Length: 390
Ligand code: UDP
Image (cartoon, rainbow, N blue to C red):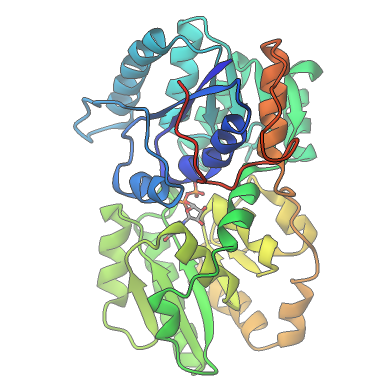
C-alpha cells in the first residue's frame, strides 16, 4: 500500500508526522511526504523536530499575492505530483489551502482521499476564513473522514455523509504532543524566568484577528503585566508580518513581556507544560493544553473546538481588551478558580489516533497490514527512524 501525505503548514506537519510514523511502522506500507511550500520556515522547523525529510517539495509558483493564486498553484502542482506518485490514497489534514488543494488534486486524478481532523465546524464561513470553507469543501470528496471527536463525527453525519465514511479516531496532535513532551527540554526562554514568576503563554495568528484584534490582545497583555508583578508573558511571534509588525509595535522592549521567535515544537511544549495560563487563538494549542491540564482563554469569537470549552478547560473570550483582562484576572487572581479549570483530561484524543487512521486506510485499500517489528500495533516513536519507503 502506498499513501501520500500532503502538508503545507506547521500544524499539518505536527498532525501528520505521527500518521507517517504509524504507517511506516508497518513493513508493507510505503509513504511519500509532499511538502507543498505553502509555508516554508515554520513547516521546515516542525519537520526538523520530527527528523522528517520530505520526499517531494513542490516548486510552488506563487507570488504571495492572493489565496486564489496560492490555491491555483497548489492544485496544479499537486495534480502533477500525484499523477506521478500514483498512490492508493492521499491523506490531507485540517483546513488549509494545501489540504483543500491536495484533496481536489487527488479527486481530479481519481485517487481516494482521506481527511484527517474532519468534521470541525464553526458554522460561519467568515470565521475562521478561509478555513471553514476549505474543510467543508474537502468533506464531500473524501472517501474516509477521520473525525477527532464524536461531535465532529456528528457534524459530518448531519451533512449527510454516510456512516461508513466517518471514523472517530481522536486528534493526531495528541499522539504528537505526548511523544514530544517526553523530551523534557528546558528552552532558554524558561531559564530566563525569575524564581517564583508565573508564566503566561500567548499565541496569536488568525486572519480574523489581524489588526485591531492583535492590537487589543497586546494592550490586554500590558494591562495584566502591570496588574500582576509576578507574571511573565511569553509570546512566540508568528512569522506573518501582519501579526509580527503589530506585536513588535505594541510590545517591543516591555518589561516581563518576552516577544520571541517561533519556538521549535519541543521547546514550545516545554513552555506550555510549565505555564499557568494560555491565551491563544490557535487551534492546535487549544487541543494540546488540556493534555497538561493548562487552562486556555481562547482569543476568538467562536471556536470549532467546543469540546475543551464543554469540559471546562477552555473559555471563549474573544479579542475585546476589557474582556481579556477581566477573564485572565479571574484566573490569575484566584488559584481555586484556575484549578477548577484543570480538572478534566484531554477530550481530543488518547495518543493512539494515528494507528487507528492507518488501520482504516488499510481496510479501505483491502490491504492486510504487516505488524510492526517492535511491538504489535505500537506506534513508532514520532520521528524515530524510518526513511520513506516510497
Ligand atoms: N507551535 C510551535 N511553536 C510555536 C508556536 C506554536 O511549535 O512557537 C505549535 C503548537 O504547539 C501547535 C501548532 O504549532 O501544535 C499550532 O500552530 P498554529 O497556531 O500556527 O496553527 P493552528 O493550530 O491555529 O492551525
